[in-house]
Image 1 (tube, rainbow over the protein chains, first blue to last red):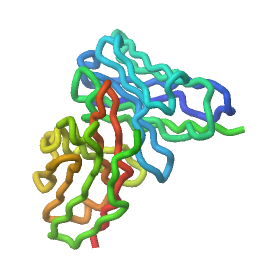
Image 2: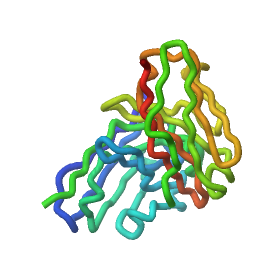
Image 3: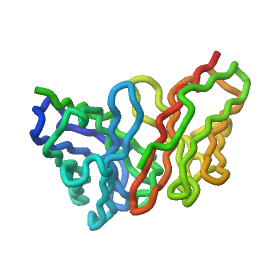
Image 4: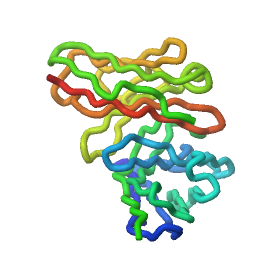
Length: 121
Length: 110
């Protein structure tokens, strides 16, 4: 079964750090760009970050630039998002999503179930 | 970058057609044919319905179609069915490997 499974979400204090992981299974991971998309409960989708097939090219939304770092390990079929200097406005469900292309173009054809991140004291 | 503009709500009766618009700028929707549409039911992850403006992934009914004119993309759902009731989001490539989403449209089947 084609699947993305996120983990690592939870409650963290403002200014803290958290690392999200996404494990891919059921498909060949390496030929596709991977992304993180978040959604505040009851609100819309926001693209957070993307990474190319090799990991050499990464990009971030302005709202997280300088605080979040995306990475991938093609040997382990995993995607990660290191989040630091977390703010209350980072509170959201974080989805891992596969792009149909080798570089981010926004055709996210496979999504995980999401992991909740809550930033609160 | 600001989010793409979608109407907050749309509705139609079973069997009817409804069109949802998605307005961007010449830096995103108007400049690239990488417009996608997603369907999201409550508590579920989004599902890709349209990519590259008009293309349907395997398994998506042909009742769903996409188009684009200038800076505005559209999703049309024909032959509305009860299970089409959901939130719909558009997205566009915005250059430099970045993506922008619309604010979402709640489609109600009356």
